[in-house]
Length: 290
View 1 (cartoon, helix red, strand yellow):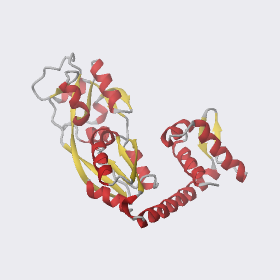
View 2 (tube, helix red, strand yellow):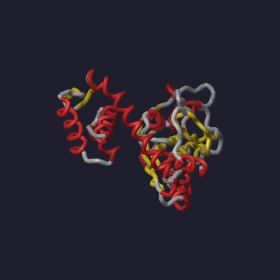
View 3 (cartoon, helix red, strand yellow):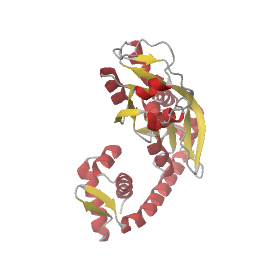
View 4 (cartoon, helix red, strand yellow):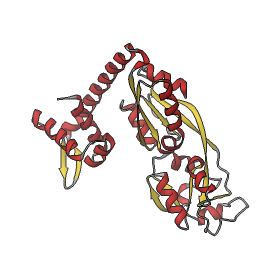
């Protein structure tokens, strides 16, 4: 077996979906399927059960998954050592970030880092807060960046920046000219479009709802997996959303959205790493740059 086959197996096992694994690995679906088939054929052991168009890990796959992760982690440690021996003239740093950070806050910092260390290749993948934590735990990422408060064992979490959630609506929304703070009755009566469960934006908003309101009180009419999709839906209809000011500000300034009067607290951005693993020199330099 090869490290690439192990990497593909772990990606499929974690997502239980060939297409999503292929997309996240930047491979074709046929390449992912062929790698899994080759691994199973070479060792005469099926690792997945195919049920209709879906996948489930069978007992052999469940037993093999932690071993595959351990091998990949050791291979990554070995690569980090060799890159460190070469100093910061060359190397690779794998990052995962939640959507708001990855799209609006991190790119300019990655660009500044590349100017200082042109030999270090930066690889960024974007997911929700839960995805980022899993990537750090599973050694898919050496550094993770999230805006959610979600915690996990074996994860070191350090604040490196901040943002604020705001509530926005389309310019034709009935409350678009509202000046007084939204009441609990207003909030409960609104039609909400929100990010998916597991995203930092969703969890932060639900954690800081005004007194007397719980997440179950909200009329959530639409759940979407990206900031861009949420903003497009809200700008075109009568729904409202809570979203990063970084993401919404350009559309507010362009007159395509309006901010509604509801005060939400500032939320920190966190840098994550696995506290049981050492950091490469590239990661140390990147953390210092942040």
